[in-house]
Structures are given as C-alpha cells and as structure tokens.
Length: 305
Length: 66
Ligand code: SF4
Ligand SMILES: [Zn+2]
Ligand SMILES: [Zn+2]
Image (cartoon, rainbow over all chains, first blue to last red; front, side, top):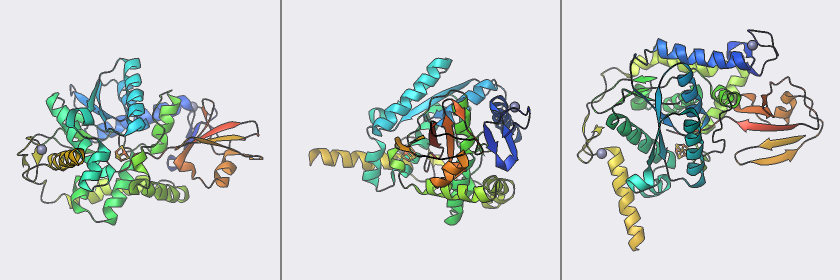
C-alpha cells in the first residue's frame, strides 16, 4: 500500500476516505481534520482560554498534542476516579505527557476531594459505574472550568464515541440526550461552553496518531467497562464499517447536519441553581449532589455497621 | 510468530500466518477495531508476516458511556 500523497509505503489505510497514508502525511491529515472541524463549527474564538478533559487514554492525549501543534495553548484537567491501578496508571500517563511538554495539568481527586470513588458511587446509587462516572466527570470538569475562568471545555470524544452514543440514543429514542448531542454546546448560566474537536477522527485513527507520535497512553481498559453497552455498539458498528466503509461517519454526519435540529425544538430546558452547590440544574438539587449524598450516607452506614 | 494481545495483556504463538489480513481473520478480529504494531511501525492489512515476527494487536475501542 502506498501513501496517497507521496507514494511512499503507507502505515495506515483509511477506507472511508479511500486513502492510505505514510506517517508524516497521516499526522498532517489528522491535524487538518481537527483544524477543519474547529473552523466548521466555530469552536474556538481567538483568545479563548481552553481546558481539556484529560483521561490518560489515546483520545485526550492525542487531542492535546494536536491542539498544541495547531498553535493553541490548552491546559488539562485530570479527574482521579478512584478505580485502583487503572486510575493511578492513567494519571501517570497524563502527568508524564504534560511534564514532557511543559503543559499545565490540574488533578482533581474524587475520593480525596469529594469523599467517594466511582465504584462506591455506583454501589450506593444502583447506577452503572459508567453512569456514576460520567455524571461525576461532567459535573467536576465543568466546575473546574467555571472556577478557573476558562471559556471552553474541550473533550476528546471521537467519531466512534459519538456514533455509538447516537446509536444508543436512537435505539432508546432518548429525546433529551438526542437534543443535547452536539459537537458544540454553548455556554449557559453556570455551564462552560463545551466542544468536541475529534468528532471526525475515528477511534482507530486517534490510537494510530498516538502510537505514531510516540505518545504513551493507557492501553488497558477501565475494569468497570467490561460488557459496557457502548463498547459493544462500537464493535458492531465496526463490523458494519468493514462491509460499508464510511457508514459510521455518514450516520453521525447525517444526524448532525439534518437530524439533530428536530430534537432541539423548544429550546434548552430552563436551568436553576442547585440548592446544595449552586451549579446549574433542572431540578432543585443537582444530580451530582444527589449522587454524592446517597454515596456518603452509604459509606457511613457501612463504616458503622 | 508471537502475537501480543491486550486488555488484558497476554501472548499467543501462531505459525504460518502469511499476511496481517490472515492473522486478523484467524483470530476473528475486525481490522477497524485494532492497530497492528510491529516494533515501532504500524502494519497495513497487506503486510507480509513471518514466523519470527512479534506483533501486537492493540484494541482501539475504549471508553464506555461518558
Ligand atoms: S469505563 Fe466507565 S467507569 Fe471506567 S472510566 Fe470510562 S466511563 Fe468511567
Ligand atoms: Zn506520504
Ligand atoms: Zn449540586
């Protein structure tokens, strides 16, 4: 296989683009995709202060590298979830990456700073670990962004993340989530603007970008992810993609270009300040404070039992 | 050849695999779900393999609901 640009030996084939690339041209291709996504969705304005959610995985570290190479100054925030070795390893990858490049990484420790871990929250609230985790991440990352005076929270969700989430939301006709699934969520009272510049880059490509750029990242999977529905959808979508290259991108793009408007009619829900922490919410007490309360009660009950 | 699998990390031995494409087929792995890594290079599916090769099949799917 030969590179589409220079005819040297290719290191990766991207069937949906009908293209093969050598290392330098692949790296350039990915950066260009991100640059175009940022421009097409007006994601970043000059002078914006950017905060990236860093997990230590391939997506967030690749994105940090790409944005830096594109000339953006981006700080990172890592949330320690209290998931054993997985958390300590991914923290180490994140810190090494930041140190080597002289980038600023803020670390928030869920157990130390909020008093509970993701497994504890899942057990106490009868949510899945990923649901308790996702809720905590959204809440805390937004809070760090607001308190740090950042304009925009940058997230490393890739094409496969978004396609699988869309697939899941469609299977359940979850109208509320469908209305919110967009690569740019504008700022609202107490909510920082959120952007996803990797939505046109497939998961295989962010992984390849990381490997080819010499980025060391957490390859092992979070132990809580076993049997995760979204990951199963991804595998199925990849089987479809093998047969019809481009189908994942088409599914997501069609939704963003034509479908998503229909779900956003009536505008976003009214937000009020959480009675407990002041963060924006649709109810009286926000979902994170409720999760935290039941978890801390449960931890105390176990301690005294 | 030696094949390194991940999540969790483990190794298997295979013989007579001619190309990356055949390796993936033997293990019933979809090309879109893995990177095939030999040393510091990424291999495309047409790449020839030999019995002395050490190849890592690195899954690219990660995450979960967020
Ligand atoms: S797999 Fe689930 S629990 Fe683990 S980090 Fe991802 S969202 Fe959190
Ligand atoms: Zn080239
Ligand atoms: Zn609250």
